[in-house]
Every structure is written in C-alpha cells, then in structure tokens.
Length: 129
Image (cartoon, rainbow, N blue to C red; front, side):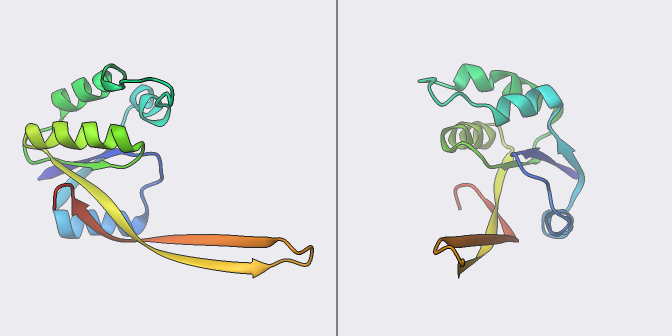
C-alpha cells in the first residue's frame, strides 16, 4: 500500500484521513519529524533561494518514500512549487487538498465587521492536473 507524507502546517482532519484512505488507497499517513516540520513551517521570507533550506526535507523524503507514494504539499508557494516539481521528477505523487469555503460577515455593535471563514475538505487533487 502507498504511503501519504504530510508536508503542510495544519492538522490532518478526520475527513481528510477518510478521503485519503478511500480515494488514494493509502495505508500509512506520516507526519514529518519535528525538526523537518520546523523547517517547513519557518521558511525565511527574506531568503532569495530556499532550495538549500529545503534540502534536509528532500533528503529525508527520498530515503523514506517509495515510488508511487503521495506527498500532500501545502504552504509557502515557492516551497510547494519546488517540492511538487521534485516529487514529479522522482515518480512520487504530489497532491493538495481542495476546500469548500464558507464566509460569514457580521456587523458588530461597535460598528466593526467580523469576518469568519470556515473551510471544509472537498477532494485531493494532483499537482499538474
């Protein structure tokens, strides 16, 4: 069975777990080790190139993943591009989670506006499709 590696900064929801097992057929769902999660969550905004920053993550994935495994990649746009491109070139399957968004706006007593956004997982989509 394929594995799903979580390369993102959020909690993986019960809906996402169920969908990953049903639609992707994954057996294992793996979080990044803490030190690699820290790298992914703290990409420096002032660094002109982040390839070296991401190299420990790429090295770990290359050692742990098998051909045909899935990588859920979401976060910094440039980092997602680098990781998805790398995954595709090494016969891994980069995906992202699509969501339905519901926005609610309320006028408060003090005249300010409160915007609330609720996101719910819809499907997983492959990068490049």
